[in-house]
Amino acid sequence: MAFDAPAVNTNSRRNAFAYVTHAAPVIAPVVAVSPPAPVVAAAPPPITVAPPAPATPSVPQFRYRYIGRFGPRHRSIAALTRDGDVITARTGATFDGGFVLRAIHNDALEVETAAGTSLRVPMER
Image 1 (tube, rainbow, N blue to C red):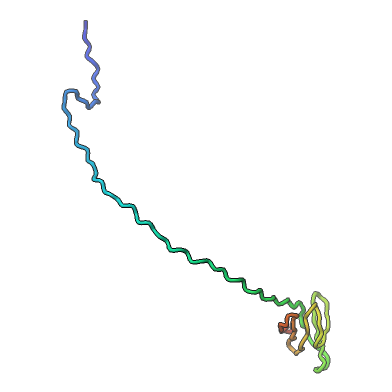
Image 2 (cartoon, one colour; image 1 turned 90 degrees about the vertical axis):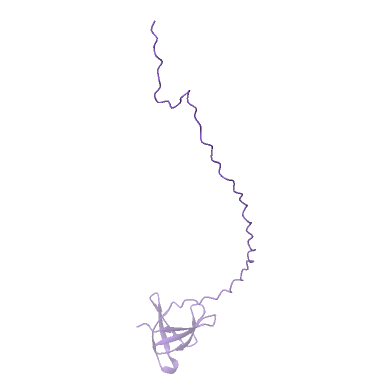
């Protein structure tokens, strides 16, 4: 009867007959960490909302173009145009729902709106 040798594992590091000492585990010292101090935030300033400014009335757009004047100086007549239509007006005339012609000059008109705002309309050249 033949006795076969047991299979040997050459990759094993274990030696059943050797006494192995292991290095003592290193224990890190425990450092007591105190909790951070609570952050106390200052109370936010109260929110104040300013009342809205009163709406300033918008000046209506004067849609006429001043194209010239004719007649005697003391009774001048202004010629205006809008959308292809030509109209004439004297000082004091009211037109387009609230515009009043206050003065006729050689180079411009002075027009007052219903709100009392004065507009200077230059002559178109």
